[in-house]
Image (cartoon, rainbow over all chains, first blue to last red; front, side):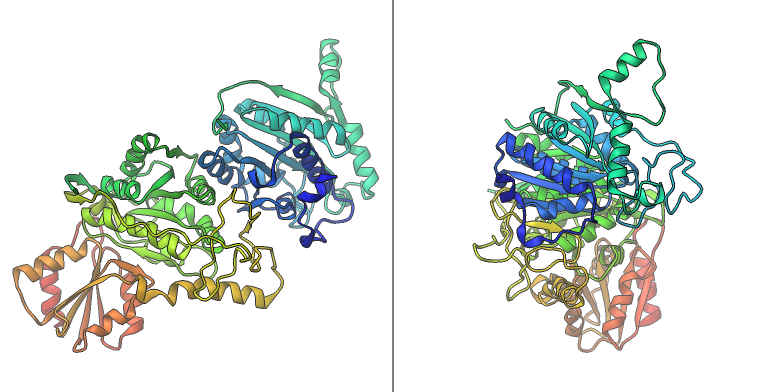
Length: 262
Length: 366
């Protein structure tokens, strides 16, 4: 396991709660890095604020843990100033879609050559479980005590509409597919966006009758609808259940990109 | 061979940045600073540099900080509202000791205020505007030549002290056209490099850590959280926070004699004007029109860290007069350091004080 060489052993133990999905996502990302054979000194992990954004602190490369929502703007500066660096951004649903929404759409539009991995746990985890832009309608949180009354963002659709070259969505249950998707994203010039639906048993599951980690992972597994299956349902004129989300490779294209290594 | 040109202040600022080796500009259009971005957009690609128009000022300063960590000299330029938007990430640059230059072509505020008129209303914001305790460096040009010279100097100070450095200009000096002498080469003070075995946030004797740019193999962790000398978050240890914040402030304040840059006229005078930026020009005109050794003038080119020792040069001073394009922002700082009365002479609306107005003040207070 060369992935071990990529961890800052002196930073352990990490801050993540028992049963958190973020470790799985970090592990899958490093497995993809290993598959690509990237070198540590040529790789930078960048993040904003939140549970997801603590990830770069555990990885033994240059790492930039920035301000809330701004990771993609920092990453744009790093990548354009030195296209020779491999840039990976870890972010979360609050960081990316709420306070950082503007930077998200513009980074996708510019198609800056980087890989963005979003740990979407549908909640502001670090501050104790407040409703975020991806909290499903009706879901409970400390700021939606009567069930969320807002529609939720579909982050992958947003990235596609804004112009990212590669967009995929998986869950923390689909680890093999996730590694493949992140690696495919890393190989694609331009911005690659990989959304990972992940469990926060502490601050999401606890309020939504998914208290056990296995219940949350089961929820993600049973609500994930493979994109090919969804298309078949649509073709057959059948209804796609509202509470399902599509998973799979959603876009792979070759729009002009910025910051690609020459 | 230097060359002499007739140019606008904002252009001179951009030329100064290019001469200093700036190779990254991230910005967002805002009056009255936009000419700097336009000049950099034309010039940087020809020099192998990067110009990017970001989606807002929060993104501009973020991209600049990111670029700075790859080792390039990086800058942004903005004005009041954009400067306000940059405040959080300016604090991030302070905390992570990221060298970069931020030019503020000040205009009338608060809020949208007077986009096309000059002011010096952000002089305290550049010192105290981000949350928490810190110190920074701010320069104040009074001519188009100084737009060039002080922009070069800002890059050197930013790299020397590992801080964001501010060029606190204004609409007058930004849009004014004057003769500028542009040298073939300018002095470049490089960032001190991190040496093997050193920790990336260990300040050593002078409080300034060595810099390891991204890609140099040091695997540096850069965070806005309170961190130890390794750069690792250490947010619950009171002593670690105290040590870090005192070092961030101390490395600037203890160097204020070295950073200071000011001019003294008539040190034996009893009545002393203290100025920075364009109001200095009115005082110079006044002293030219009515030479009087009883009138002193302290002109600051470096405003922060404040050089309080420069005030004591005027041993016979009975009163300090401070014409500023604000309601007396720096007069508060001066009064903190002297026993004599400090009289603010505010001017709002965008025009400079006239010599007659300063003469009137002189007659009222000397």
